[in-house]
Image 1 (cartoon, helix red, strand yellow):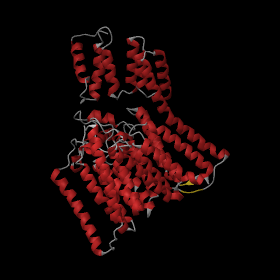
Image 2 (cartoon, one colour):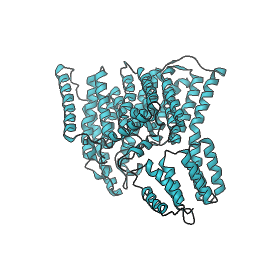
Image 3 (cartoon, one colour):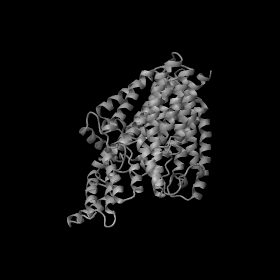
Image 4 (cartoon, helix red, strand yellow):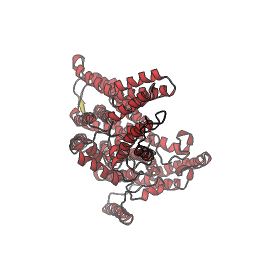
Length: 594
């Protein structure tokens, strides 16, 4: 009985933790979420048994292994390890989802509640300023608690799919709150993804009229409330005082409640019949919307320039550098077609090929293009196979299972224009749902020696997850110790960090700060350069340190390092270029003092 409850409780608990505490694009949550997933899988194997559907997870696990193999040639090997662990996490989440195969209704209801809680919390951050810090110069686009507006917008798309499956008062309220939140994210990719989710749902569902009533009942008041919110500076404008935020936030809260009441009232109105006239009107409305979008693109054009974070961005047709980033990724692919430049290493391609310092990113904002550039044809093939195997279980679904089946496609569509792979918060619902639809009834419980292979694999995976996490903590502590003058402790902690993760650069710099002589300190900078020679940062830091070696610096060593830095990051607007020119002048005057 305990195991049966855990079949749904485990995936929902992990998803809820990812949604509220996923930590944005950072890797801090990967270790403990992965450890939780490993623990859940172990308990489920003992109490319930091994479920069917494991082959659907294997290509994703193979992709994680390929990410790990790419450490060998990656320009950012520490980040490649982080990417391997993140992919492992998503495979584990899909694996936990396998056990929910027989209880998909409970899973759908649980996900709807979790997503509804996230959306309500994000909206409350605008109503009650103390719940989420939108003050100061920060961008006020709705983003809490996930951390970034575009990913929150994707979460609202998930919620809309589940709301259309649920319908009734609960579904209408969920859809209404999701639509208001979606508007306040100003996310064009999120809006397009939500539109596609609704279109596919209405195309595939057997209950179009009920679903359309839920959608219209939610959309009409949501549009009004969202429109008024754009006129409230304390809700949608930057640099507002706390007084203005409280004043407009309370007004916005009252509007939210009024809009919810209107949505419920509309939902209770008499349903229209499924007539030919109504179908033709719906088709005409869809054609009109598509035509309006085409005209807008034709009039405004499609560029690649920067787009501001104001509400006006919703109507912009610029890609906000995305076309440029995709071109940079293509450069990386053509140079390393088979195996790529290494998982998570696109940032180096961006620095190498960008045309302006404003063009700065760590991802190309297109997941297949990123896989192609970083992992080559092999990685893209594994990624495509992983998607196919997980999506195969989503075919020909109805009702709440159709809503679950739309989550991973929504994730993949949105990832064509954004960095969703870096956010466990939006990946967790999608992979858990896909796992549940790919799974099947448990075969048999595992006992004794039959558990040994699973335990061995679990320990290896746990070691991979914990090593870079713990190494990063020790590296930070080493830096703090060096800053406080505790040089012996700093060196000890830095060596511990390198024992767990030899690819990190921070321990070298901590040991340099703790070094007894400038020569020993500079040697640590040289070691950092040798560890990641394609990364401009260690070259810059080594050059800047050489400039300031007592008593008069070492212009020649500084020039050598800064020259390589400027080659790897030619469009930097930092001090490195000016420092390089200064050292070059000294070298030309034969000033080689060290």
